[in-house]
Image (tube, rainbow, N blue to C red):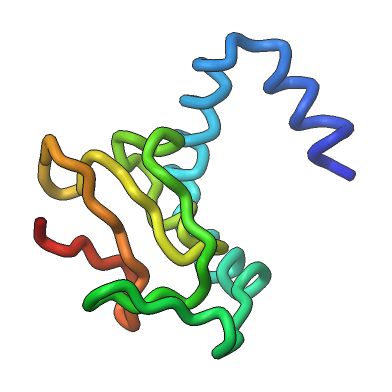
Length: 112
């Protein structure tokens, strides 16, 4: 597999923080791949739908704050998961954590 034979060895030779940032920047620069990734990884099954207050998630899989704490690539990360928790919205700075929910029109940033 490409990941095990090529990508992983390159990432593991670098400092972990540098690899982390490199992956995030690569995801942010390649948002044009979003539709392809979403089609490949998306699973639609009514049994997986989760409702929490006013939010409805397609599945219970999410990513807690930390991986993309500066919201560099929330769209690409959301291609295969239902929600992303981050500390910033791409269009505005915020000190409290917010949830980027996938809605019919794409990503939505609920007001706090």
